[in-house]
Image (cartoon, rainbow, N blue to C red):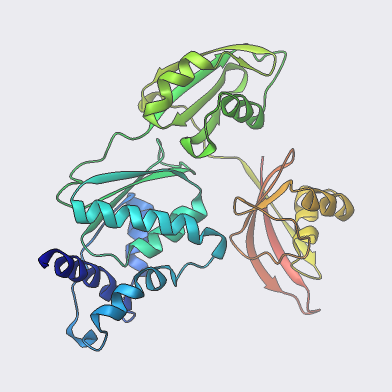
Length: 318
């Protein structure tokens, strides 16, 4: 009969800190994104004796997920929270697959509410876009885990250049799920460097032999051998009557609004890595717009003009 009581106390210990809305949180999230490591030890507060144990247990998931801004990410974040809870309770280290930046950010904001938890994000290199989270009790997660592997895919692409999408398609064509892959770093005519979960690196080395019509060789390389450059960008300003996706994206990618609306309805446009099919979707500062065959566009500062229009900063990735 003692086990259920101990479990209930453990759950309460992790739920109660989430109610401490007066405690500043910004510095914790900022520390994570710069240092890629965050240790959370949130003390209990006696002022919350008004919250009964049954209520805390029943509302655990709802309370933790209440702060998720993008509702499309709730299920992903929920699975990560459950993973973190198991790791902390059992004093072991568990790993997620590669996460998109929005899911990574939302997960960190939620995990920040849990006590006695250490989180390490790794993508293979400092500017990695897609990262894995390693979660565990601080006593178990004592060093950075080895949970990201690097591969070099090389071939003669001088006469048949291949895009990021070509390499991604070839890799997924072997049967590997997208969330098992991290970033794909183009190396010009030489090929690419790819980040992958370690347990699938041997499989890819043996299974991948062609990208498009180009024969390739795939081999493991150390993370220190990764070659990458900060992305090149070009900024421009656009005055728009509204912040509709079709209007802003057509200006950023320099295509007609009719064509952009068609791309959106066809499922070729993603906002923050999620497919969007409605042209009237409202965009905001910080949004990342991806269009198949066109590239990526980040929304910078948005301000109002005297004529009640919107001056939008558009950052195009080259």
